[in-house]
Length: 217
Ligand code: E4P
Image (cartoon, rainbow, N blue to C red; front, side):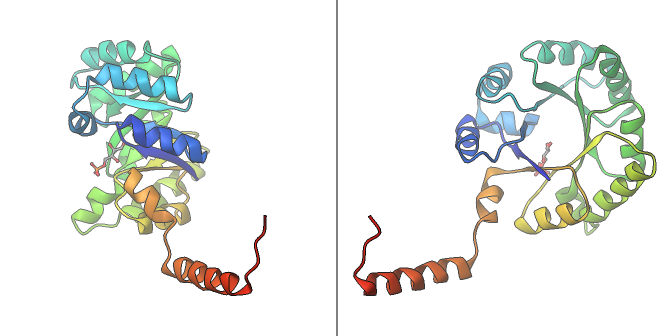
């Protein structure tokens, strides 16, 4: 499973590039607002740091507006992916970008039928929001499983990005469900490495090593 990072913070991304953990970046209007920075500047900067896909979301709600904004965003760099909402207007815009050879990420997906529609209009990626489903007592991982099954049934190439990830458990669940990608907040990526038995194991080995009085170098 590929790891995208869900952030508009450039420093988070630099860190993950150093780790070799970065397969792509997703942003959304809320993350841009949180960064307090100019949207197009952030996208341009992200694209100078990585040649992996960088999703940048349109703000318009009508097809013509989405196409105009998406073309503007796509002109920033070759690795920009135009992020479109899963509405009829968004799907029309997606079909347009497919014809133009511009990559798309159809976002705010909450049902298998929506994911099927995104694939039918040629979306490069679809983003089911698992955390927001869990928030209302539904099962986000079930949605990923259902979309995986449908996409396998028809040999669909649209890649599934498990989005709205909130916890390390989400990562295990969506990996088991066959998601192609998870887009993960940096705080959750850091938590993935943590295990108390790793920490106590290190402590024990270190104490025992020190008791030998040896040095490796
Ligand atoms: C990613 O593409 C989404 O915009 C993001 O994962 C949404 O996450 P949230 O539900 O925590 O806002």
